[in-house]
Image 1 (cartoon, helix red, strand yellow):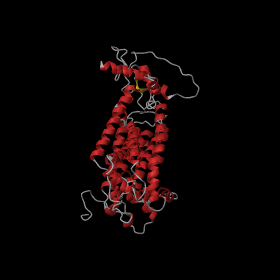
Image 2: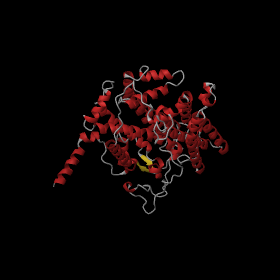
Image 3: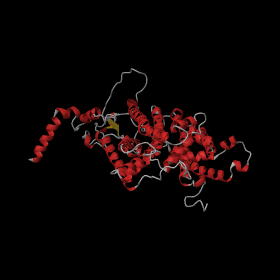
Image 4: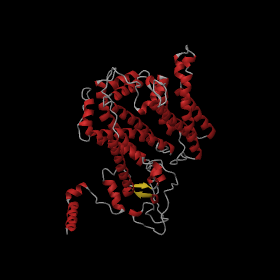
Length: 507
């Protein structure tokens, strides 16, 4: 009797005009209802109504793009409550951090989740960019979406960088001091950029307020716009990139010609050998991505196949961040003291590779090499316009070997050049050598030159710009990782090179 009354009450609520004005469609029970739900729901409308089988495979994307978006949402969800307990002033900032730790209920866990989610987003956005490159997912018509992805990666770095200062402890103060000093190395506009960021010549109240506004307002708004356009372009460009004959796109079984959609995770809901024809009136020249790459028999409704996977991923990421926030505290040093510098003063970990190169040469390592790397990333889809290998990891076996040897070769050469520079510095061998030669002959610039030569040689031998791009990108990836590891673990006081188990006295 109780169940019957409950069912009647639920039915009455769902038939009520107020309920129906909010939820236009009931919980979908058939394919038409699933399509209507995806089209009319505000939160689901950003997803396609149907999705290719191959795109649902974990090995196709490793869910890195979705994980990046979920971390962005989690940063919003944890960042807004933190704003209620924080004042961006040098007198209050550090005390508010301590209040979050000892006074505010669950404040420490909330701050920890926000910090680890920020670091996680930096890493996952970068891995997402790596995945997109190695699967050739930047090829036409997806060139502009690759450019948007590169800019989103840079904005992610800048968002984490601006949040680094807000605790106002020794670690944050001197990390931002080093980071903004690197920005000042740019010719002509470097000092102006530094002045704009700091609001003066040193890290102080002006810098804290500007970083706070950038962190909580300007950068998130820019990222929301670019993320929205990024997702929209994925749909308009025909969905996620995939091979022409994707493994997941297999025909339906003849023994079950029309299975219900709820059991069609691995099989097509269309009859076998279905003869489906259609015509498209041409109102503009060109071929639409949807017509050229998608076939109805290779698709499944996004509800529940994609939506369920996203819900599981969301729950997993939130649980992982909550566990990290509970067991691992975000670092918080002593109150910032401009008169007692850290030794060594290090930038945030994701900029330590850049700081390592600046240690060789401020101009070459801080401006020329990073500038060339960003320009190379932005230009990749406009230089490599070959359509072969789209959606295929490394394009071919040759691409796999080139990526492996380029990564291993650069990973070996980068620390070797660093060691040689330590033992045979140009200034030590030739004290009167001009400064511009010192700037040019350093591990970062020499490695960059060798990488460019190697990629051009690969293009000449293979007659493939894609193979040259794989060589160049793999070398960039290895150099970025090696220099970051050196900066994090192998640089001690006064920026001397030392092993992690050594102490300055032993060294």
